[in-house]
Amino acid sequence: VTVPRFNLLSLDMPDRFEVAIVDKVVKEQEKITLEFEKESAVTKEEINLENAKADKDILILRAESQANGTKLVEAAKASAYRKLQLGVADLRHTLALELGFNGTSTTNYDKLLNYMWLDVVRGRANNADMLFNIKKMLVSQP
Image 1 (cartoon, rainbow, N blue to C red):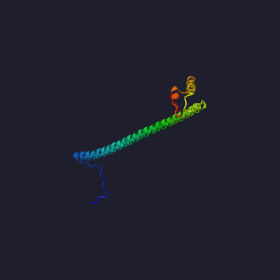
Image 2 (image 1 turned 30 degrees about the vertical axis):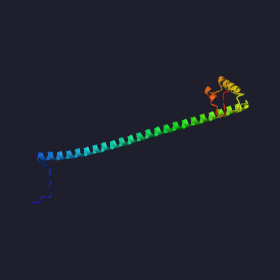
Image 3 (image 1 turned 45 degrees about the vertical axis):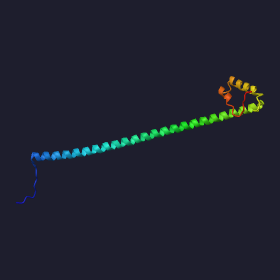
């Protein structure tokens, strides 16, 4: 007998065999899911680490920039103040010479101090301590 075609319409396996196949497939899928979750967790931690490094670098750059800015501002203030004080000393020296105070005599000392005191009282001088910042003059009391 020759059977030219054969159609298998139903295949019945024992229940134990079907349960074993289903369990194996489910376990493989759970294994794949766990591996994916592990890779996902590792990737998330790597991203968090890179974000933390970037935040640290940003904080360092901000702190360095602020420190450099403060340093430059303070250096500019110091330079301006120094130039101002040198200008004031030069002007006082010129004033002392014009009043006849040559640094070796105290003849016109009273005139110079009186002029400077009136300058402070009139409000033209920035502050009273500028009276005593005379670098180029020799001031001596008799």
